[in-house]
Image (cartoon, rainbow, N blue to C red; front, side, top):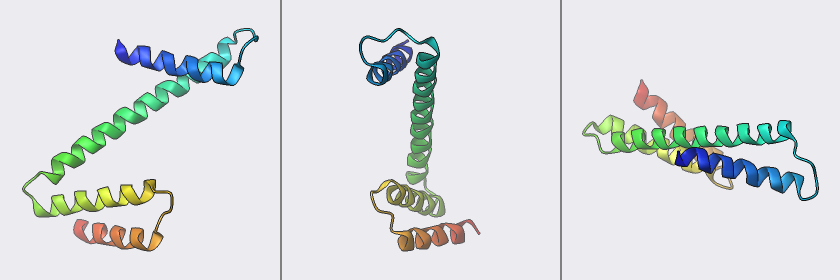
Length: 101
């Protein structure tokens, strides 16, 4: 129930930010904001699941799985930074590819 409340709160906040005061309620516009809020919620849940799987791989006994998980974490950190160092990204990707082979 708490997730539904958070999604509705997010949708209303974004709707009010866009529409402002003094306008009539638009069901279609609010529906679009609600859909976007659910998409954000799903994306965050998927990201949390992926991070949990990667954390499990990092703590596994298999050295190859652990190294691959470290490389994927480094790649994610590079991709979410303000500036992407594509040379380092390419090197890490090549290492990950060679581990998979």
